[in-house]
Image 1 (cartoon, rainbow, N blue to C red):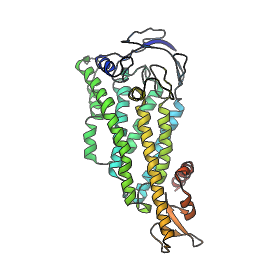
Image 2: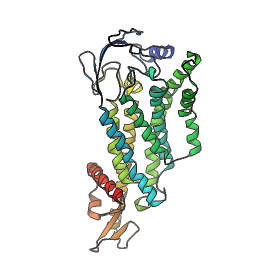
Image 3: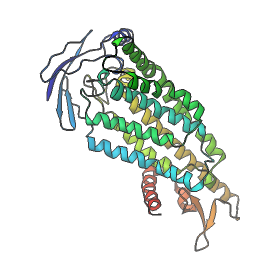
Image 4: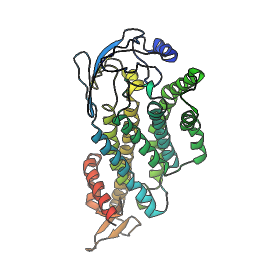
Length: 382
């Protein structure tokens, strides 16, 4: 299937913002109204200024956009399915820790709420371009018509949201956020009919998308980054086996969400060729049009990695203090093995000897990831 298209930004809201922020570029996919593909070989002119030209090709689950001699290939659907499964599995260590301890001591409620807000906002934006107004981003961010990959992108954000929702932090505060995010979309989805007038419903939809894309989403992403400090404070006061925070979970989610973040670069449809290493339009143009899922997932992966490093450092410091101070008594963090040697109760409740604990550094993340997979396997066997 081949489409020859001429792309630009349309719609009153998209045109206004385009003239203010990027005079010669298209604006947010969900705010502007890019042209829909009318059929094979169709030629659609919806440009407002300096349009970009491109050739769009579709073969199975691989989509290629050739523009100015550059080539772009989407993430195969099979890879997206694997990442969805890995995302779900990455929450199991923490959920198992909570289930086994029957206590959430050591986990910051603010940290959980912040990540839930980020997941909710990502689902809000994804639902808008996939479920509520799919034509708003057709050919820019999503396909027109929607492809299997677009729906898998939606499932990716939905799974993350559902698993964060399990922890249920600050129900009242979160309910208020739902009133400005998913609830309006649900009302629009239920109340809208094919016979609904384009005005004022269409303008409301565009204002909703612009409000979230330009304001709420960046703010919530910053809150997600700030959640590191909320959880680090809890880790400082509640470390060792007293804490319900799973270090295995942190290690696994660091790896999985880093992969998810990287995959989003190749999950979307670009209105023009974009070089992921040397883009010409600037960071903000890329972020608001295509890159916000990359940043949101990347920030979460970075926070999880930072918390993992901090928690391991705290435990290593405690070991060093006890060894330096000549402590001989057993604390709640220690036990004796079959040979009478002191061992530290660590991570999933499996024991790691003191020398291994001392050698743990931030550079051992790949080893931690492999051990996390082993711990997950052992847990599922129980």
